[in-house]
Length: 83
Image (cartoon, rainbow, N blue to C red; front, side):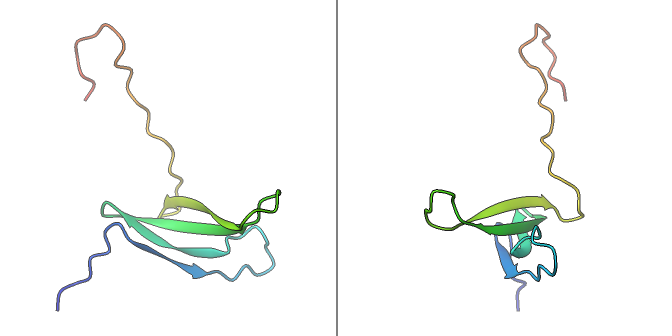
């Protein structure tokens, strides 16, 4: 029997919010390009009364945040590629 490929797939499960209303309504994991991430979702109702939706947050599986990586400035006059 072959192992199931979870690449680019994920799952959310109902979360026990306990006494903290700010906790996500759903939590789970998602695999993006072979890297595992934590996925959180909150059920939201728009102020204008529209249809409910889920607000999502993706974070590193080890608890860190996904900060954008700095992009090198390639517009300067240097001929070198910063690798």
